[in-house]
Length: 354
Image (cartoon, rainbow, N blue to C red; front, side, top):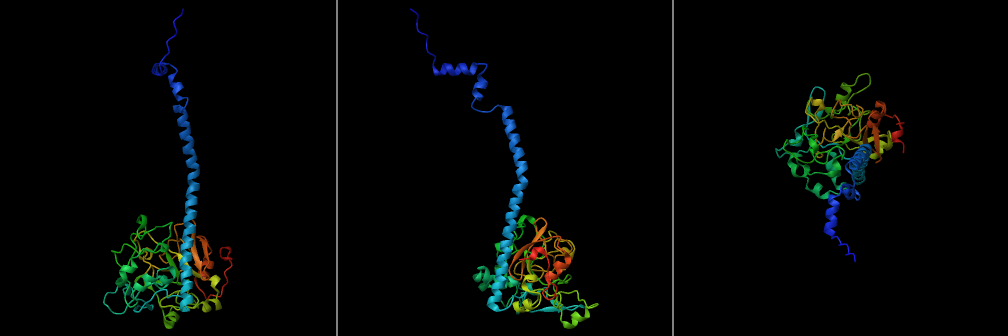
């Protein structure tokens, strides 16, 4: 009688498999070989390479949409101010002025005044704070004192004041780090949006403040019937020094749909020539919160121009509250006509049709 074949234990079988010359293949039956893994990794990398530009475009599209929403928030606030006060807010409040051979301009030191005398230098954004759910912040602002004297409020970071494609804080990613500020030590309160002062020369570059020329000074600077300054009647925008423009004035002239209200603004990232040295601060009236349409967007010629970090376009808000993207390549005549409200020239451009 044959003796029964002894049964192998699980341990014995396991050891046999490990010793088998085919063991490696048997172990990989539930996984991948090295060549297979290499192919999978290569495919994944190729997929990422193909989809990365698409994902970047999606992210930028989202940022552009958010930028337009923030610009719309400010535009609605300006309109809300008009409904409450029956006028658009001043581009900047100036209680002090200076003059040179050309004429009068806002005192560049008023915003930094600390002498206790009546002063301001505040921007239009201060005036619209109640209309962007910041009534408490507005109530803390001392209307009789300078921007510097209101430093605690002026350094408040307002999320809607920043374009998400550029930055989310005053010195985000090192951008705008060399901008001129009310005080060099300020670490908050930056701004990427500006009110349009017109389509002419808006700022005294030497003083870095806004021209406020009177009628005689404008006449003296007029050549062949053309005055190059934004203070001139046919160059004026919705905002200016101590401006108090009304909706009816704009409607009676070029019409709200044909006038630029707000725009993304140029922020040079260096402190190179004075005309390429940007100012920064939402509370500060002047170059920090105003712009001109005398140059097309994104020329790099001057800090007063419209510009953005969006590829090929800049977002703007018109006087009727509509927000539109505008190409950097927009016709200069169309752009300058948008910048003023009394040129009498209709805007025929597809980007501004309803």
